[in-house]
Amino acid sequence: MRRGKDSRFGKTSALAHLPATMIRFLHTRIRVQNLDDSIAFYQKLGYVERERKSSPQGNQLAFLELPGNEVFLELTWSEDYKTTCPEDLVHTALGVPDIIDYCDQLEKAGLDIWPSGWREKFSSGGRKMAFVTDPDGYEVEILER
Image (cartoon, rainbow, N blue to C red; front, side, top):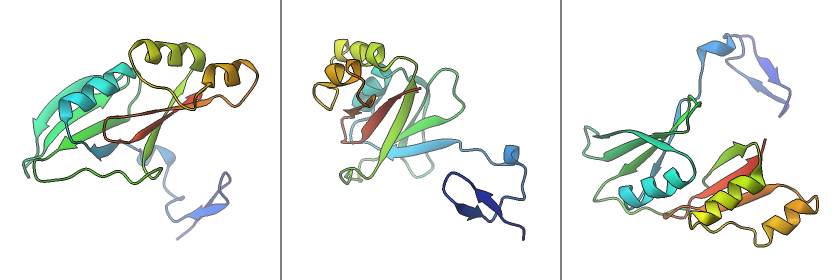
């Protein structure tokens, strides 16, 4: 099997012989303690709820997407599962055109942005990266793109 090199990481892919359009990243699933609270949080970030349904195993599922994106976020809740999020292990990341404007909107919607003093750091030429934390402790990284 022919292997290709990923120039960003210096690693080789066993599937590099396949056309890039054959494999697509589709979604990420995270478990939540309260589906409605989590949906409300992600809607403040710009997500739109597209569908809710039950899985064959009895999980309650909500499918959220950011307009213009093909990848979606799947939230799942089940009565018998306790959600635990190891610190700094699981996070998602959003790219925004103007991070100061976006973070201002999030603060107006009642979300805490960290690190503290982000506005001063950004205006002084500091690295433009911020975070918010969802109701279950999952971090959402915000980068200016």
